[in-house]
Amino acid sequence: MIRVGVTGAAGRMGRTVIETAGDREDVTVVFAVDATDEETVAGTPVHEPDDIGALLATHEPDAIVDFSVPKATVAFAEACAAAGVPLVTGTTGFEDDQLDALEGASEDVAVLKAANFARGIQALLSTVHAAAEALPGYDVELTETHHNGKQDAPSGTANTLLDALAEERDFEETYGREGMQPREAGEVGVHVRRAGDVRGEHELMFAGNDEVVTLTHRAEDRGVFAAGAIDAAVWIAGRDPGFYTFGDVIEG
Ligand code: NAD
Image (cartoon, rainbow, N blue to C red; front, top):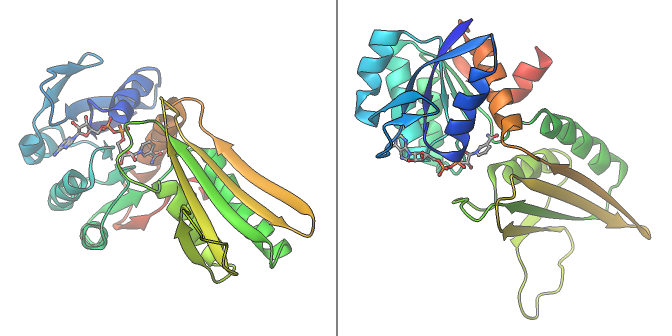
């Protein structure tokens, strides 16, 4: 059984991680951290972010599981690097300098960052490569939908899908269209919807040659992300320093 600390614990995802961990036998949550007034989350006491160094030293967890905000994730990564505790983060929306800071921390400790901990997204990524290779010249459009509380747009997963496509072809992204804006050759339209409590939907459309292929993933419960993040924590415990992805976990 591995011992984890959860940061961003009072959020939609952090709470789900604690609840999911409670149902598993391979992990136990030893502390929770959040910038919230809530004193407990799912029965676990919540500590302030400034306490992270002392918590890492006292509890010596095998890993941290983080779903918070980019600035906080960077601070947690630096604390983990100093304490020698691996970090798994699902936070999205990092600026380039924040990504540099995470990579800097990964020189001292194992850091795993994934925009999406659903296993189906890993399968989708492989399919994107296959479709782009088999359908050269087809127009591609990407649409993603998330709940109305999501901060960053487009989603980290949308950017990961675009990165996968960019390995197969050159294109320019166009974010939404308005007014007289016909489609340019070689562009990929990116469309973002925010509504209700949608957990996360991504659709990549390939259209051409009088046919349409759509690759779609829909997360139906936040538990799918929590389970993947906990699997990543189990995988990263005891790993050498380095910057890892969820694909590394799936490949074993
Ligand atoms: P949320 O807003 O519900 O939760 C974020 C939590 O972080 C809040 O409780 C907030 O109080 C806390 N927080 C803010 N500043 C903090 C600080 N300085 N220290 C500690 N905690 C702090 O958001 P959410 O829906 O839980 O999502 C969190 C992140 O995870 C987002 O970036 C989201 O895009 C991402 N996400 C990733 C995946 C994935 O599979 N990788 C899945 C869902 C969401």
